[in-house]
Every structure is written in structure tokens, then in C-alpha cells.
Image (cartoon, rainbow, N blue to C red; front, side, top):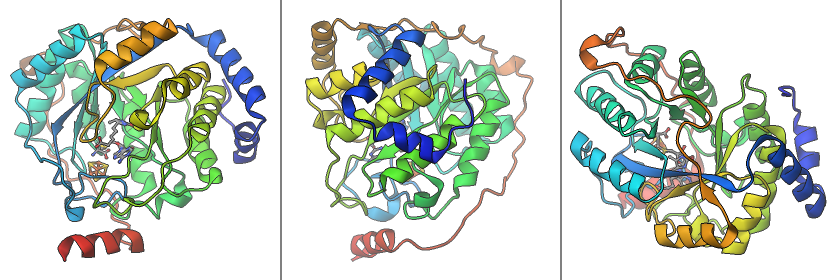
Length: 359
Ligand code: SAM
Ligand code: DTB
Ligand code: SF4
């Protein structure tokens, strides 16, 4: 496994003639994975909207006043019912997302830990994406039976400053580092089509591929431009860019699960098939991502049938984590108030969207 990729090397791969790029990526893919198996994960927005951050792509940021329906933290039984439904529909993983800047110790986090225990006992892989977390919080999640933690780098360190001003790229690396200190696997990727250069896509892949170990899972999202966000007017990327990004990710991170994430409603079946050929081996299923539309589950299953793809069983890559009950926990809440950064620079595009929403 190589951990010393440079931006130039990655750019060279990304820009290869397409047929060569596809052939190389598909060859690497076959060496490390069954090309006919795709992992299916269901997203569940357990706490929606009202987020204090200013991520320029995100409909859940309170400051942009988008047209989404906000919700307080869901109940454990409601989450269990949704997880059972997802399992019956062929998902082996549930990913719970919360519109939080970071996790705070207290009742709500205890409730999330209970959700993790509950889903793990359904013999499904459990993933959470809750914003920044401390090492102690990562350990408490691990003890509850968490399989993966998602925290995206989103883009290159350079372009990051044009997208988010309320926390720094380094904060993201710190959270990933905290997860790495536990038995929980790392899921980290990003978004393309936010107005970044191809060099920024390569830069993001350098940051991910030089982590040692590399993330077990890398989601590649295409921007879903949502009305009211600073990125509402950005034109969708072409399928060729998605295919190139997936193929390059596959080549530089051969063992990783590459997730074809947001943006599939814009892609044809042929386009998605090309992404699977290029090494994507996971999707998010369910008619909604967190707040935006996703292809219908039945449509996805039809596509799987057509392409001869099979949904992956849970715990193929790593054994099911044991669940420790709250009463037997070794890790008590620390009530830490960590000093995550607030870089505080302003991003004109984000400021304009905020002013427009206020008006
Ligand atoms: N609040 C937590 C955080 O930011 O870490 C977790 C939820 S957040 C919505 C998870 C990820 O969803 C983001 O890091 C981003 O990569 C992706 N995402 C959010 N809005 C998106 C959009 N409009 N298009 C594509 N991806 C998006
Ligand atoms: C990831 O990289 N993509 C998913 C998951 N991780 C949490 C989220 C996509 C969200 C798309 C916008 C929305 O539906 O709100
Ligand atoms: Fe909040 Fe996460 Fe959206 Fe950023 S991406 S605004 S942190 S919910």
C-alpha cells in the first residue's frame, strides 16, 4: 500500500486517456474486491437542519434559510423501525447523520449511543456522522458497537477556505485521528462540482491517500445544488468527471470501499455502471439522502439485477463490534469543551447567501 502519493502523480492518473484509466482502475478493483458486489448503506437523518456552521454546499446550515424540514433528535424506537425497514430492503449498513458542529456529552449523545447499540444488535453495520468528536467520544461510540465514523475532508486544503469558514481543515484531520485511535473504521471523502479545480480534487485525494492507514471507506459526492445555499447556481458536473474521480480514488486507495454517494439522481444507469466498472463498490440507498432526493430503492434493485450486482452482506471486511451496555461502560462522559478552531475568515459567496436569506 502506498502512502506517499503526490498531487502531480494523482493528476497524471486523473487525466489519462479514459480507456486507459478505466482499464487500470478496473484491474486494481478486481485484485482487491469482488467486482459484482456492491455494499448498500441507508442514510438516516436523525437530527435535521438548524446547524450553526457555514458549509457553502449544505442545505442544513441555519443561516441560509433553505426549504428543508428541520427535526429534533429522533427517538431510538423510530430509528430501530427505520433500520429494520432498510435491512428488509437489502441494506447491510445504516449511516446516521446529525446536523451538529460537534458532539456534546449529555442526554442527546447518550441517546445516539443507544441507537448505535440497537442497530448493532440487528446485525447491521452502524455508521455515524455527527460532526467533530473527541477521542473519548470516539471511544464511547466504539464501545456502543459503532462500525464506522464518517467525517469528510470535503475538498483540498486550499479550496476548503472558499467553502467553510467556521472550522478548519485541520479540525477535520483531528477528528479522523481521534476515530483512528479506536477500533472504529474511518469513512472520509468529499464533494466534487463545487467550483474547485481538478488540482483540488487531486489535493483532496492526496490528503486521504497519505493517511496511514488509508480510510476504509471514501464517499465521492457530486454537489447537489440546493436553492438558498451559496452554491445554488453551480452547474452540475458531467458524468465523465465522476467516472474519472472514482477511478482515480480506486487506483490510489485499492483496498478502500469507494462510495458513489450524492448526485445519483442526475446520473443515468449507464453512467452509474461506468462508475461501478471504475471501482465504486458502495451506494447510499433510500429515496432520500439526508434532505435531498435519491433514486427509489426499487429502481436501484432493478439496476443491480440488470448489471448482475449483488448487495454485500454485513461484516465481510471486519468482524461485528461487540456492544457494551451503558451500565457496563468503561468510558465515562468527560464533559470536555474542546477548542476546535473558528478560523473566522469570510467567504464572499457565503456572506451573500446569508444576506439574501436575511432580506
Ligand atoms: N454535520 C456533520 C458534518 O458536517 O460532519 C455530518 C453531516 S454532513 C451533512 C455530511 C456530509 O454530507 C458533508 O461533509 C458533505 O460532504 C455532504 N453533503 C452535505 N450537503 C451536500 C450537498 N448539497 N451535496 C453533496 N454532498 C453534501
Ligand atoms: C457522505 O459523504 N454523503 C452523505 C453521507 N456522507 C452522510 C450525505 C450526502 C448529503 C447530501 C445532501 C443532503 O441530502 O442533505
Ligand atoms: Fe452543519 Fe454538517 Fe451541514 Fe456543515 S455539512 S452545515 S456541519 S450539517
